[in-house]
Image (cartoon, rainbow, N blue to C red; front, side, top):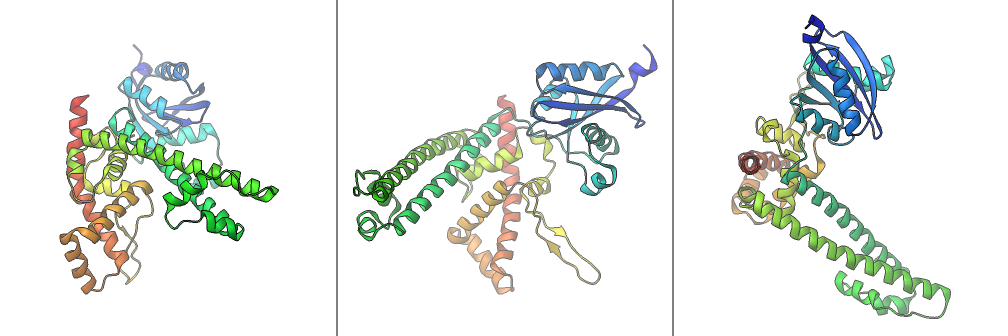
Length: 352
């Protein structure tokens, strides 16, 4: 066996929908080769086989491990290769050095070599991924349902007075059902079109309402089975529990401490001091869905939990605004829920 075949290699991959571009470097940073493969199982095997020609592949930096690179990430992990998630190159670097797929792949490999890329990709292979899938469908259904009722009410507001008086209801369910029962509003083209459109929007809203009920039942069943510790806490419902677990992922070892989860949820304060001014600012990164889940839990507790209400009163007396108190609560909630999330994830790993 020659020396070259024994050297440890690092693979960098720029991922796309149809094609992945890979670059191999050694631990001295020397560029050994570039290859483009199809984004399928045969392409992944080809990329791995080609990389092995230069030595022993030990680490890989992959862009988009949760999207275009998800399949490749799972493939490499199955072959016991340590995979790191790589962010897109800095815009200033792109302006100075230009952009190409081989350049991005090389940057991914060098990020791993330099230690800049340290994030472990989230595995998408268990109950947490199932919760994420249902949550994605639920989010779009809620949005479409809201759009449908807003459009229906907007049409009724501008409709002829007799139509508005006939169909308008203060309660959403009653208004939708009244529009769904419409057969005819008149013989003119306007009234015929208005009747068919209102009926279509009402049926769409009812269909989405039924779909949401089914999705909520799925989340209830999944979280009651796989997130019992998390669900036991005040204010944590099936939707918020599912979002938090899906953000944490099926591999709990990627979360080293509660600060890591706080960063994923975008609730960790970031230093923003300058000169004599010492301050922190809100982290605008992280998962916005998880941030919203924490916001929901905090809001429920601020309204109904005696301990939280006492905290709000104390902090208000100290001069903090409602927004500042809400930010503090979200961080405290992460601290409280982190061990419960890790315990639930540990049980999931044992079940697998």
